[in-house]
Image 1 (cartoon, helix red, strand yellow):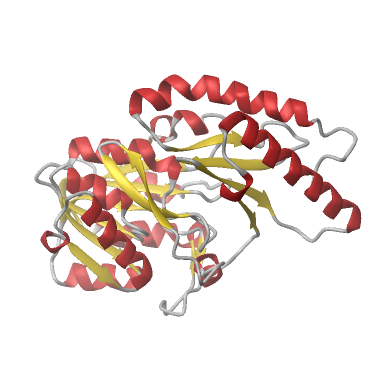
Image 2 (image 1 turned 180 degrees about the horizontal axis):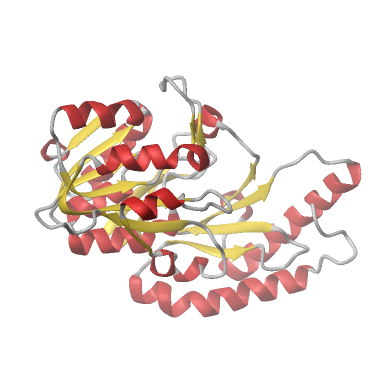
Length: 323
């Protein structure tokens, strides 16, 4: 952990939060956004992430083993953050959720942090609403950095066949369906598919007009190819690593993305577009993808204003070459 009790300045933290609120105010108000990133390790002495969800906040810390001195620093930081958030955002301590983001693999990243938590509530991202849970899991149920892609799909999915792979809680699926697409959502977790189903309901979408399917995505790509299924838009946003017990083999996106993209492209209809995204740090797209397909990096517009100083993800459109 960076920083110490001497150099960490609570006033600087409060001033930075105030500055960030002012900088984002117009963007958030114009778009009526309730869930956003306010702080991204802006001050080295406070290496934390702060996300706002309506009248609550989530604070992430990168986890590691701490000695006694570092533990004391963490406790001081937590008090500083609690005070700053309450003063600047008027969010009381009881509605601030501190989480430690340790390096996790596979099924660990989806395990429940608080199995007793049933605290779901809605946040608005017009024209959508999404259910989030700030307590039960490490992630909240909504990937804030994919906001621009959701808006794009809302505006470009009318009458399109849309496939959302590793769909998580279905926010991308909601956007495409709200925009008039027929959406197939596939994930390994029934829990998240149920969550996606509820997200459809609160957005006045009939889930029965769409497809929700629990499967090992890697195997399902082959199954659907054999059935001859094709889609006009495919969204592929896999985990960086997974060894879920529901999968026959583990997934390492750095190692496996050429095969994963190849198998996904076999389901793409003529003239269709694959949107591929990854949060893997220092990810590089294998040159064979550029050799075989028409590739364009779109990260410059898929990363929203509240994440503009971070490399939160890399995103690409992948299409077949025109014959």
